[in-house]
Each structure stands twice: as structure tokens, then as C-alpha cells.
Length: 210
Ligand code: GAR
Image (cartoon, rainbow, N blue to C red; front, side, top):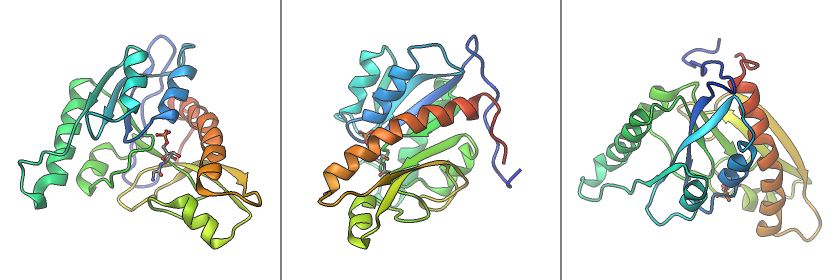
């Protein structure tokens, strides 16, 4: 196995792998995953965490009866130590809920090596480009600026880099003439919403090895 990655246990519909989904925005990916999990799967979302209390995605969790908490940055902590202090709060929620796999679904914070090492192999991200192309927070803008004719989305295990780590699956989406960021984002999201649950099925049923 690629060094340092410890994959989740094999789940069953009777004893699904307990997922936490981390969001920063509207959470359409979270909503799609929760819809998918209405049918018993080998994974189940048991916790939603947002990096603020007013994040729209929290409502999708609440609507599905899933514990959903906003964990804002602890502004009382001095700036230099705030990022890790925030991650410790997030980690405490994950541990209290006995979470086994963490899914970054539009979570827009870069995680520190401390957090990544704690969850390595059990921390996956969806990114709206065909990595390694266009990492970072502006994937669609960067893809349009580069003039590519095909972009897409990537699900990968998270390592200590930014949008790097072993790629589990990708889907291509054609860039159409006249596309702007919003139009492209919407089409890529539709692919993400199908890809993410598929990868979770494979990962949580022991079909992925590194
Ligand atoms: C998704 O397209 C996801 O791939 C992207 O944010 C969007 C979240 O949408 N993530 C990143 O850009 C991470 N670097 P949503 O809140 O509607 O699910």
C-alpha cells in the first residue's frame, strides 16, 4: 500500500461505514449523497460539519435527520495558532461521533499536515477539475482561462499537499463554446454527484487498494 494511507474498514448495509461530510457552501454534493443513502448502502452519513454556523449545506443534513454542526474559526485564539485550533475542534466532533471516514464536499479550507496525518486514507476530497490540472480554489476559472476543451472532476485521497494524493476516480466534461464559470460548474457538479457515491461504494466495500 502507498505509504501512510490506512483505508476504512469494509462496511455492510447492516453496519455501514460512518461518514462525516465537511462543507463550506450550499452543499449540493452533500444533498446528492444523502439522497443516494436513502437506500441502505455500505456507508452512511452520520455527521455534517461546516466551517461556519450559517453555511447553507447544514440544512441538507438537518433535513435528513443527520447531526449537523457549524464549527467556526476560534477567533479568540491568536492568528498563528487558529488554523490548528480550529481543526482540533473539528477533530473533536469527528471523534465524539465515532466517525470512520471524512468526506470533503466543497470544504474550502486547506488542511494542516496534523489533520491529514490523523485521517490519512480515511479522508477524501472531490475537486472540480481533472487533477493534477487546475488545483486550488478557482478550478473552473483556471480551466476556462487555459482554453481546455475537456475538464471534469476528481475524487482523491487527501495527502499533505494541496489537491494532491492518490486519485480514485475522474469524470470528463466537455467545455462548450460560450461556457462561463457558472455554466461549467453546474455541469461538473452533475458529474460529481454521480461520481462521489460510486467511489464511496467502492471504497467502503473493500474494492479499492493502493
Ligand atoms: C463542488 O463543485 C466541489 O467540487 C468544489 O466546490 C463545489 C461545492 O459545491 N470543491 C472545491 O472547489 C474544493 N477545492 P456544493 O457546496 O454545491 O456541493
